[in-house]
Amino acid sequence: MIRAARAVYFTALGLWVGGMATLAFVVAPTVFRTVKPRALAGSTFGAVLQSFGPMQIALGVLAALAVAVLMKGGDLRPRSGRLRLGVLLLMLLIACNAQFVLGPAIERERDSIVNFDSLPAGIPRRARFDSLHKWSVWLASISLLAGAGLLARSAATMKASDGP
Image 1 (cartoon, rainbow, N blue to C red):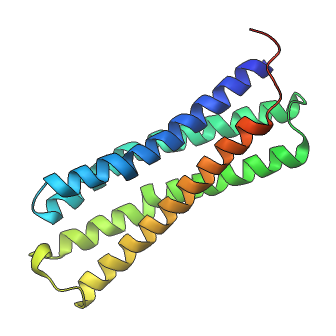
Image 2 (cartoon, rainbow, N blue to C red):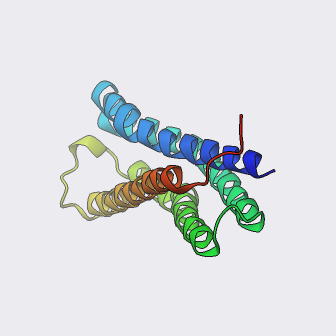
């Protein structure tokens, strides 16, 4: 049971962090470089993020459940387990916010702006959009860094497996 929980934990966290990194460093730059106008690129990438959201949430729940099993089975010390659960909870809160609050708000703002690409940054509607977008990027960055740190720390400190 402990080996399975470890495998679920590392697989879920690895897929989650790897997915976020792929979106941030491969998909977003490619979409914004190749799709024109910029508003269409934003809509396209927004749709990708909305599609990835449920997967993030499911992976986060799986990773948290695996940590709970590892704590109950004595494979993780209480402090270490609580720390991991805390980081996972933070990441889950960010993912839920992006999926259900921030992402839809960004989409509404973008859709309300006619001629989005030609609207100057100082116009109030554009400023609201830019502010929401900055929050989104900032929170996603925190989640990615927290997840990568958790993955690295977990790999370095998790007890060795009990055989092949």
